[in-house]
Structures are given as C-alpha cells and as structure tokens.
Image 1 (cartoon, rainbow, N blue to C red):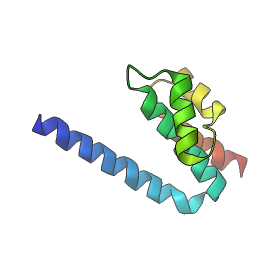
Image 2: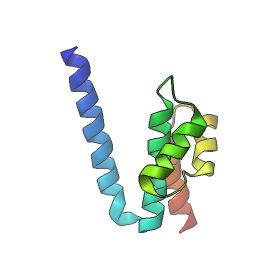
Image 3: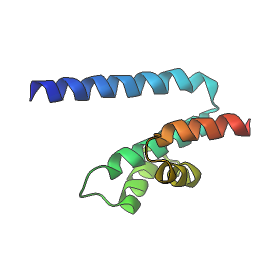
Length: 94
C-alpha cells in the first residue's frame, strides 16, 4: 500500500509540475481549457463515473468546457495523454 501511495503522490506531483510549466506559455483561457480537459479525463478513469458526468464536473470545477478536439484525439491515440494533444493543438493555433 505504501508503494501505491508513493507512486500516486509522485504522479500527482509530476502532473502539477507539468501544468505549472505550461501555464506561462498559454493564455489564461487556453490554460483553463487544458486544465478542464485533463480533469475530465482523470475523472473518467473512475469506473463509476461516465464521460458526460466527468465533463460536467470538470466544467463546474474550472468554469470552462473541456476541449472536444483533445477528447477525440486522445481516444484516437490511446498512448498519448490528451493534455499533450491539447498543448500541441494550442501551440499550432498560435
């Protein structure tokens, strides 16, 4: 159990560090959209939470709708996290 907790904390720390590194590169609106999309995908990992409910909760938490484009891209490319796809999409738009 201790290993799993340690791994979870390490993974959470890495995720937070990545978001902190990306924040200055994006506008506030795009950053919040990226955060909302990642949050919705994390919530969807729970077996009791359906995709629609995860998106609604993410929208309530951040005030921004999760990106549909990143959501579709993530399902098309299962080995690439959607947050990465969203970041690449945002960079391409600018």
